[in-house]
Image (cartoon, each protein chain N blue to C red):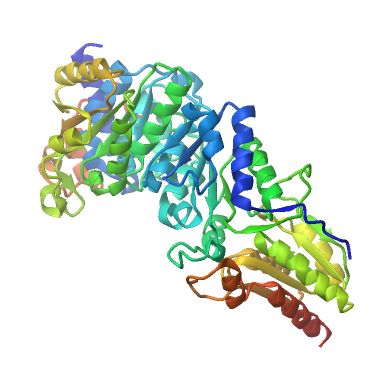
Length: 280
Length: 319
């Protein structure tokens, strides 16, 4: 898909995110906006999957796990725009009896979701587990997962990182949303990750870096990551992003991590994002 | 009273090991994960015969639980193995989110449960695990009574699609369940029929209750003994049918009084049929080092405690 077309989809995804969280005055717009370009790329360019016949087992499909479940709005929008369910369902986000729970879940059977997430730090282990089963099944497709940078403060992430390299789980590509922000402030201030690339290297992973808002650079980097799969090492991409990307007053701060824009702020934000595919 | 032939003496964890080994031969989807306790969990046979389906995760139980949850995606049936303490309390959130809430077909197999792991002491003697696990929606909780029943349950849960907590232990105990008995999840075993008192037990306390029932029968007290191997879903009909006849009940378990089998039975009685109940369970206390049998005596979950509880509850009924 042309870069321009992917950017147009991402613009609509950002509109969806803002309208969803504003509608219920809750949810997490900052990280969602920051990962809109990446998730659009994954679902409209990178992964092979069957949105019309969703199965939990996902055999011979690429799988995606969102470990930082609080950025559910971006995932829901991309899943809907990719055809997993009706875009009209986006209007039910966080409302009573909705399949679009505040954090992703499987128990209301939303197509596209294979694991609940929200309590942080579990998704890397889950992705590695799914990758192990793919190997047992002789299934050559890949497993992708996304993590917040603050989430890397959870110890389980490093249990999983150690396991994957020690056991040559080389069919998983993890991406870190490295926006440098978390609820209480900058990651550097709250609990520094130190030299993140060196940490992953020391844990035995192939480490790539990319700008999460440059479509062409992401295409190239993800292609490189795919080419590294099957070589006995797991792959991680440290993706530099801006929390709140695409909306000027939301960028450059951690304050929009978990705060929804009010109606005036929403109008301002939507004025900065082209409606390309039609609002839900 | 019916005689219970002792068919041998073995630990329930060995029943798990044999059941898992058999599954390795009969069900290609069964995989096993272990957190550095392969020998203690008796998983060696499965490992030897199916090295490609055995996953040594090291001392990283949180990772093990979430790995297992992920492995179900694509059709595998993961059996995780570690001590009960590290199978539950240490990893409650992983089980809650990735297994129970996500309805994943993971079998959490927990050895060295309760006081009877013995000398290691309270850090390893979990007495809260049944409570934690039964509170989780979607979770099935099974506490088999002896070696044969643990083997049978290990095999049976592979056919149940959903999360299961299977609890067993370390001490060598008499085997009394027939090797060809059929294990049915959620269906209690009525071991003896009687009219004066119902005793409902699980795990190692079933054998202790058999011994207690013999003593009580010798004193002319007619005991109805139920092996409640499945704590959840609970066999409500079996409880009500028996207690409506005997009009009093003793519950016996190697677990904290709070949140165990006894509380599940009390809930059924409170909602359906009021009857006096006595608990044989650990009363709001951590354990300590000692031999398994010393600990059962000291903490009030031995044969004599079942006998005394039965006499007390009958006296309350007749008061």
